[in-house]
Amino acid sequence: MLSKIPINLKKIEGEKMDQEILRAAVIAELDAINLYEQMAAMTDNDNLKKILLDVAKEEKTHVGEFETMLLKLDAEQVEELKAGEKEVDEMIK
Image 1 (cartoon, one colour):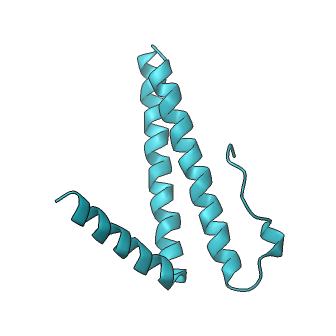
Image 2 (cartoon, rainbow, N blue to C red; image 1 turned 90 degrees about the vertical axis):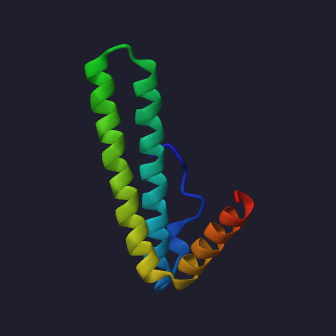
């Protein structure tokens, strides 16, 4: 993983552990997406570009899977995502 997990997962207790694991997994997938898309932009090889972008797309699915599971475990996260969506909608009207 390119990003460093900002906390020591060994210090997390109870139900928060699964939430932190999922957040770390999302970070890893986002890093992978960025890496593959950047490499695709760098190459002139159309076949390699196609493969890199396909793998990046798969990583986006993984983000969705981990986020879906996180939202099942963290009600506060659900509410804050809704609040963020509302703020964006108000700003871009």
